[in-house]
Amino acid sequence: MKYTTKALHAKYPKQDSHNALRMPIYQNAAFEFESAEALEDVFCGRKTGHAYSRASNPTIEEFENKVKFITSANGVIATSSGMSAITNTLFALLKAGDSVVTTNKLFGHTLSFFQTTMVDFGITVHYVDICDSNSIEDVIDDTTKVIFFETISNPELVIPDIGLLSSIARKHNLLLVCDSTMTPFYLFDSKKYDINIDILSATKYISGGGTTIGGLIIDNGNFDWTTYQNLKKFSDGFGSNAFVAKLKKQTFRNIGACLSAQSAYMLSLGLETLALRADRTGENIKALASFLSNHEKIKSVNYPMLDGNKFQKLSNEYFLFPGSVLTFDVANKSEAYKFMNSLKLIRRSTNIQDNKSLIIAPYHTIYAEYSVLEKESFGLREGTLRLSVGIEDIEDLISDISSALDEI
Ligand SMILES: *Cc1c(COP(=O)(O)O)cnc(C)c1O
Image 1 (cartoon, protein in one colour):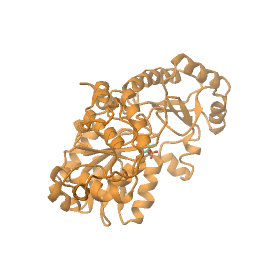
Image 2: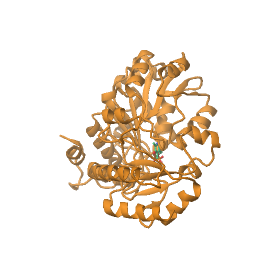
Image 3: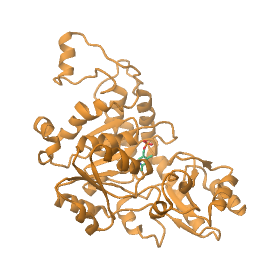
């Protein structure tokens, strides 16, 4: 079975008591038990069952079950947001004194999490050139546990050499953790590239209509936890499920950043049409990238599929297509703002991978708190615009952009 058939027909092992054809929204906090013994059995893990929705809930489990079936993962945990998926994963894997290797080419709030929260909790973070093996190997020492990267960085659209990262991770027995939000599992098979933990913001392509904040932690089941000291207790008790067990019985349960049943329902619905919507954005973005590249008022266009883009080869190798976000530059801030304010269809908004096309000037918004030098190092300029391409009819998108460019 391929993506959409799987998303529609994943088997959920528990029959709904009314035979609902779609999993209902179990919007309740607690579940009751027939006997004191049955309650004890679930609490002690002797029987599976739901006791309290912060730990598990049928609607959330059905969403996780679908993702697990689609990705052939070992385990999937849905979380309240993409950020909480990242937080839970790193808090489950690391402790004070450990170090992580990553890059500064990261989504803004992920970078802020590494630069502030992780540091406050005693974790050292090394920012390296993720495309250069020497730069990575130079910082690896006994304290290093994790390499973290984004499949395509947002908004600079840097694509790391994942083959290189996986060989370094294997050589030093490190966990390879990626944020694949820009290229979810329909576009990219993280298991095929030896990635151990795949994290996504489900808020983006999966929700589709920008309906819901949510996140996913996917354990590909390809790491030997017996070699990983921080999870020793869990690998002794749960073997290949050590990571999921630590999340469920400790980190995820204790942090409490669970999804709501209502949100799980929306995300489960979005999952079913992901391929249809993604394919449509893929056609639209190709047409727009080419239109913008040929327009005299545009200084440059950044989309990995374009000829001359330095990541074109890696992009073709890894992804069905490199997502629905591109950036382009006009001369300066005043042109960028004039252009944005002249758009009649495309919305001024911070989200990505919505059904609607969205635009933002990241230099002046998402990255406003960074210095000029830092912003330059992220590849941002005053006239950089990030466009997330939706599923509108392409003629209407081109006409909107074309008229707005006439205004500058
Ligand atoms: C949006 C985003 C996140 C954060 O996800 P939320 O659901 O907003 O918490 C993390 N990484 C990337 C690449 C994102 O685009």
